[in-house]
Image (cartoon, rainbow, N blue to C red):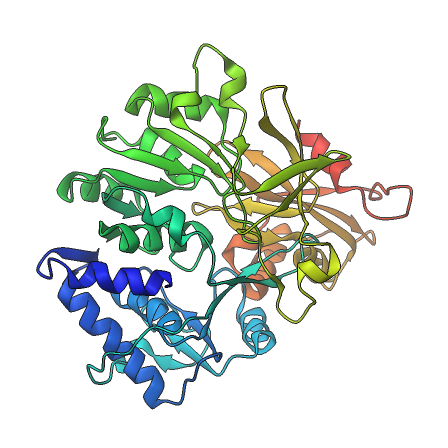
Length: 457
């Protein structure tokens, strides 16, 4: 049995009950089940077979949720294509993923071409779910360079299926780890799934929380901060799962004081889901240390620190990166998270820093791959060396700050920012620029980005 089998069972029961809501679309369980099979038929008619890769460039809509499920129903390899990179990088990602097809929602974006989601549904043909499938996520890996993390069908579904049903509002993109997890949890538990817009909006959140009587919601920290700062921030009514980037202790305290002891903080990443969990009941406002920890290790995962680096192994760790040997062949299944931390005597994990140089920024806590920005900046006139780092920001968690070594020419900062946006997208736009005579180097001759980040502490 796979999670798709259980989702079909949920959708077949109480067919008139609402299942998926997004924008102006409201689907009952029966309607969602029918559309799932019609989307699967549309893929089959176009030649998709078990094992084929299908890249999806879609936003937060009920149709997109069911498309992703249809790929798994057919035994396909679902490849999530994120909106953050520029057009050239997106095309390179799709090519590297070796997919048989690309499905796009033009209302979400037109950066890449493919079959239009709206044209995809075929006939209502019921099919038995395949036994094997995979999901591929775009990630920075441990080096800051974009890679494709592969997870197989035995992921988190049995754990999620044991949770009680809720009215769940998912705020992050369904093609990101947290959004995909929220969607799967809602479908497995027979919950009412409400999709926030693809671009988070606090006003919309407040309205949906009220109108849809939300009892569970999923945030990344900047989203939660915006809701807390909203003049009509809801009072206690929902439980919260928050993760995806560092959570400021001050803001966690504010959330608990506003909503009560209902904020659960998760630590995981694209390559390794559900590493630790800090349950709401374990947070004690009289003990500040409980506001800083990311919790205890998932009982199903092995988590340890080696020379300060956090390593993990277990069923929620990826199989490996697409096109590279599986982890079980290269490291006995162990994965270096790229995070640095330590355990206290009670088994709580604290994270000090990321050894990788990915910058987590934006209102949806997306990744900026600093190496891509570094390489692009030195192609601009007058710039000899460049290093992009994360600068702490109260609203966004982190923002992009670049250190530049010039050849003596005056650099037009506005033109530089425009060039970055044109090539890599808005997310990569530097919020700060510092001209330096030289970049600090480590003992092995690499740029010492940790030292650069220390300017902001």
